[in-house]
Length: 376
Image (cartoon, rainbow, N blue to C red; front, side):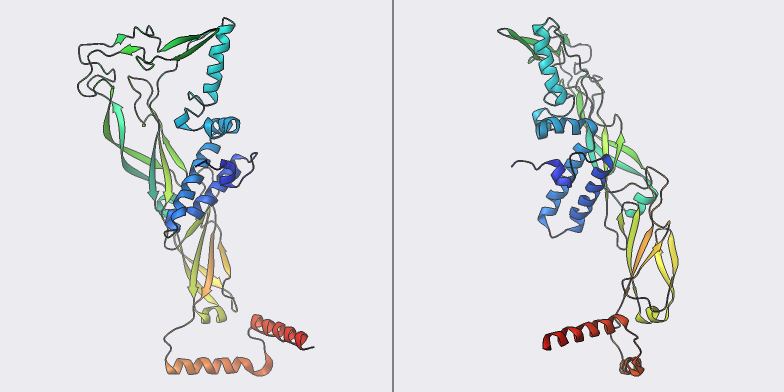
């Protein structure tokens, strides 16, 4: 099945800025997060699709490769991605080798092997994401074999120079007028042959381990943010540079608050009496509690803004706000006396022609006008 265009997935134009791409991803992540759509089987697929699109378009090199070559430029299975055998740099290297040989400028690639990057998905509570925390995680990784120190050779022996490529790691294939370089099939680019392999790693130079790491989560991180741990990914085969570990943050559903960027939102049920008479209302915040002054005659659905009670931006000093929506709660399980009191109140408000319910009165007038127009 062919993949959708990444720009289409996030709903942005091809000239979208980095900030626009990030905002679009957050919107898609909030909309399709599996925790928010437990009964929607397609939500997880849409969430992963948006995440994949963001990881490419948020990286300048990957985005450039994608813009030039489409999905092939960033697909690992096709050697894609900047610097990969089949990515943007890979295409340049291939043409450079061919035309360099034609004009006498042939060259040999000298890339140092590098271990794979790893990704760890971490679920955080809203409180931990807002305040920051330090978490211990266990990650299965391919680590350098301590017995042979990553060489792959048994103690007392050393790897031999590959006779096929002469230790260069690449061989030159002559095809008529053209000459093409490719990875040596004998040593697979390492330039060495292990004749007496290490008994622990069987000549690979790496063994699988469970690594325990401490991850410091900065205050203010949001859904989709990543914390990079340099050099904590997989070890490179036979030495080289270790990859990085990316800890991806996912927020758990909160029982009270919803987060959007640096702002928080919540709904607070209140009594009819409080809205009618006005008074003090205690509302929750991430710092504890705050008091609201509710004016008399407030209507259900009114939103109060508490400035500075939101989330501090992880990349700056900006602090969002808390938006509290009050919703009237209809009383239930009324006693006979309570029902009679309500009936008396209703009768009293209907007397004298005063409009105690302006919206209801306005609605009644509109209905009457509408019906009069039909009759006439």
